Each structure stands twice: as C-alpha cells, then as structure tokens.
Amino acid sequence: MSTDERTRRAEARRRARLAARGELPEEEQDPDPEPERASGGGGIFGRLFPPAPPLPNRPDPLAGFHGEGPLRPITSRIYLLRQNPLAWLVPGVLAFIGFYASFTYANDPLSLFGTFLLFGSLIGAGWFGWQRPTLFGIAAAILGFAIATAIVLFAFSSQGATPETFGAGAVILNLLVQAIYQAALGFLGGWYGGYLRRRQTQLSGEQKGRARRR
Image 1: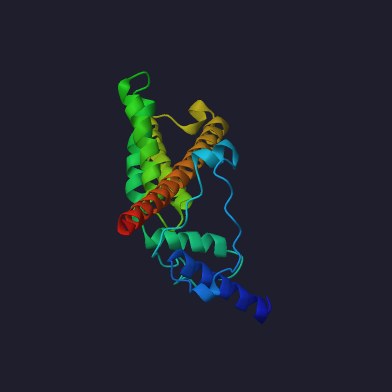
Image 2 (image 1 turned 90 degrees about the horizontal axis):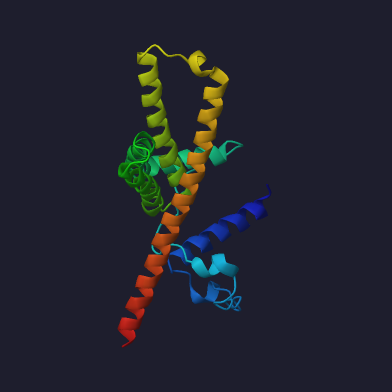
C-alpha cells in the first residue's frame, strides 16, 4: 500500500470519527451533500427501519488497535470483545437460560418465556456493544449455545452415552446447524439492538433540539 493511499485512508477515518461525534468543522463538511430521499422511499424495510446515524460523542472503537496482516479481521474483533466483555458475557449467560428453557420446557409457557429471554438478551448485547452490535450479538449467542451444549453433553456422558450412541456424524452435524442458526439469530438480535439504540438517541436529540427552540 502506497503512502498516499495510507494518508487518504487515515484522513477518511479521522473525518468519520469527527462526524460521528458532531465535531467536523464546517469547512471540512461536504459542500453539496446528497439530498435525503423522500420518506416514502427505500421500500418496506426502509419504512420500518429508517436510517439512524452513529452514536454521538463516541470514540473510535479501534483507536488503540494496531494489528496488521491477514488475521487483522479476526484480531480486531477479539480486541473489541475484550474492550467490553460484559456487553456479551452477561447477555450470553441470559441467552443460555433462554435457550435452555425454550427447549427443555417445550409446549409450556416457560418455553415462550425462554424464547423472549433469548432474543431479548441478544438485543441487549447489540444495545450495549455499541462498538459493533452484530459482533456482540453473535458472541452472546454462541456463548449461550456453547454453555447449553456443554451441559447437555455432560448430562448424556454421565449416563454412559457416547457420540456413537446417537451417531457421531449426526451429532456433529446437528450441533453445527444449531450453532449456525444461533449465530444468525445473534446477528439479527445484535443488529436490531444497535439500531434501536442509535434511533432512540437520534429521536431524543431531536426532541431536545425542538424543546430548546421553543
């Protein structure tokens, strides 16, 4: 990568951070920004989830990260999770409780409660994991699934059952499918939690602005 390319990327990141915090000087703002689309545009999804700006006054989540190389996408995500562990550890435990209840108490009101707790905890992970909501939602979902899987496998092994009892290939395939499903659920819940927080912050700021103008 050339020096000019690195400089342009660093400048773009700096401008993005300042714009997210509302600190971008007027002379550096785009002189002719693209006009906003009509509120009716964007299809059904655009109407249900209108664009929400980034959270204001938040630092760059990767400001202290200096990793390079081909593993940077992985190490950067590990760095973000280590920066805010409670945002995915606590929802992960709650997701385990919800996951376990939804499957253990099938056809019971507790199963419905478990489903709400599961998805609600993933939304909470996205809400508090503002650095990257989808990442924190996935991490919470995988943690909850891993705890539940470990408990179920331990219970079967304590009764003398082995993977061969149910078919090792079938067990591995089922666990893999469930893990992918839970990760997808975590992505969705985390995205919604992050969107909900940005949207709520935007609406609160607009209400305060209108109150000051009165």
